[in-house]
Length: 412
Ligand code: ASP
Image (cartoon, rainbow, N blue to C red; front, side, top):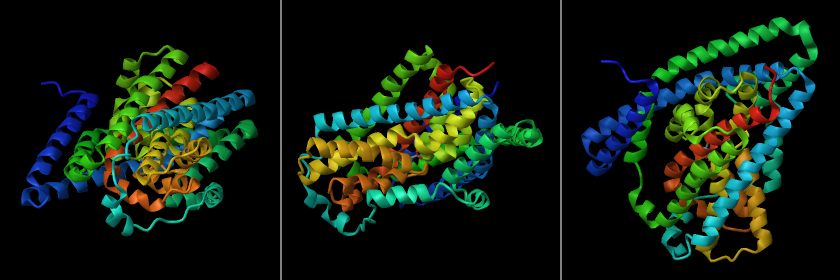
């Protein structure tokens, strides 16, 4: 019998992982068989993420500097920059508006009483994160000794250094041809290794989903069901309607064609809840399945994985309105505007790792005087919501690379 394609294997593994996770949930985590199963899935899932993270930094470093250095003409480079940033800001803006509109309409949190969550809030100590500190911390983290950044796996600092190196390679011209060739080969060899890691993806994804489903806090989920439904619903609208529409309007590509090419990355993002860990696969899907030119994908995708977060932005805004409802605060128009902007900054500043959005959300809450401790209420359900928001973050990056490619029309 023919072995099914990797794509099919991943889909089957994801479905199987969810089913086994549900069975574990029914049996209960104390069951000895479930304990053994959870130990193995935790081990396998973590190893899969470790492999992705292992290849991540060399890949980001090579792909950005090669991508930039291939955009030889100065003008083209500027066009790519500007179009990419405009795309990121607009798509995050639309996502935030969607989240805010749905929260305003459905008012999740309005019928709940804060007293129900008092215990959780007392046990949680929110770290102070004023906007000014956040911005200075973020800017301070951009320029780091590249060797430290590489060895510590500091993605954003590696992105920044690789950008500068790429520009220097362009400016330096033929003098640096050897270095350019070396980086190009570095990129090719890391992508080859990504291909090997991908063969383990079905197993890794299944393991991650078993653990995710088995450990869901079902009681908390049903208490916050309306909020969960609003967030998941708007994330789905963004992913199934808004982004495909943007894609179609700019590139005339059909959504089905897109999802067929992007599904490995989307499922991996869903299972790992990390756009950074998914990056090697996102880049592979963008260049190999969606046919984005390496010089565009090599720039847009890694940058997007660090700053373009549609799902996170939507979530941060929706969660702030949820907490306002919960504590009974009527937000003024100006306060809602503040939430719009801080949610965008908080999403851009959140690293592509699990639950990063929860940490930066403190800033959004504080910007309009909402209690940061209220985050304790959302923590138990965060792992679940992080799945879809990370998938939307990754989908935004891939749609972005296709739109940017279309708008700047790179040389053939
Ligand atoms: N987990 C998300 C990501 O990696 C970030 C977040 O919203 O927590 O893209």
